[in-house]
Length: 439
Image (cartoon, rainbow, N blue to C red):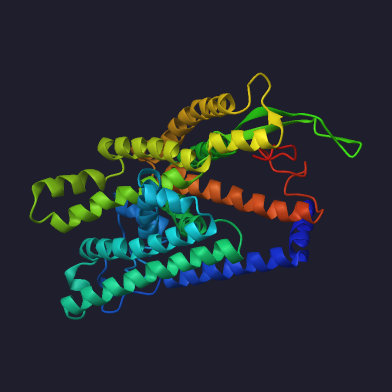
């Protein structure tokens, strides 16, 4: 406990870190307050309030803004959908590939295109949102005026959430978009745990509650291990004599994470899983097929939902890993810096070796990620309530673990740079090392 208070004191003593944490907390408070601002013309008392299936998961991700008919009802989900489309285009469209290679100017152009596409996606998704979540009896004004004004407000709310996320990334701690999703999830955890333990289980099922907590603990441990697991590739640097001094010769390593894509595959997959339900809600009254699709994909326990969800996670894991980790760039950087992998020739053989290792660790990592993502479905089958089962894996647990670890690592970096002791007794968080090859 003494070490904990000492760490808090050290964090407070670093002005830049203190300001970043306070800025992050301030932006998160604004986001949470906006989640309770109801769309004009809606009678909150007439809302259904609780959702199950995919809509319930979405409501958890947005911290209740979805069920509250809030101006942040769609949150940053349209932005994530737009980002997926843009990243796919950077792989398939030459003009986007060229922009991506232009450095900072190209990144600004891509961000601007993403923002414009976000507006278009939000306008489209807002129609389905208004139709699915807000019953006719809850609308207190002219329906046409309500639809038009709500579409404008939902679009503005999404753009404001996107702005908050960018500000958290620039002025605060952690990835802003992931942080907004995490705070929405955490806001629902206490209420879900209370309902599960004291309301649904009660004293008659106290043993079941204890078993639930134990199982949840082990799932969290396994998830942390997945997020932190790395495959270290040894690298040797040739000795160089410069001005009578010998440089290099030390043995370092390249840490390739088993889950190099972090929380993004689960976020991307979850964002796309929302689309079938919203589209089905628009045509459910006129099409039996749309109604069947809506029923299948609004139930997170159905085999259709979980099969597609797991498959999308595996695909997005490979896709996002290919974008974030480029074996060719790593091989070129090693060659320029005089480094080589023992037993592997520099250049193309090094690139092929790193790519082969990356494929081997990404496959089991993606499958394991998909398994964790669908554990909540099995938890519900075992008798856990849908609200609490979401924290047994899936989007909620993976995002919380990933974002919290990433945030702690950033805080630790500030502490170590100022020669303070890190977050762990060893002075560094597990999975990090001071002897890492720059690639």
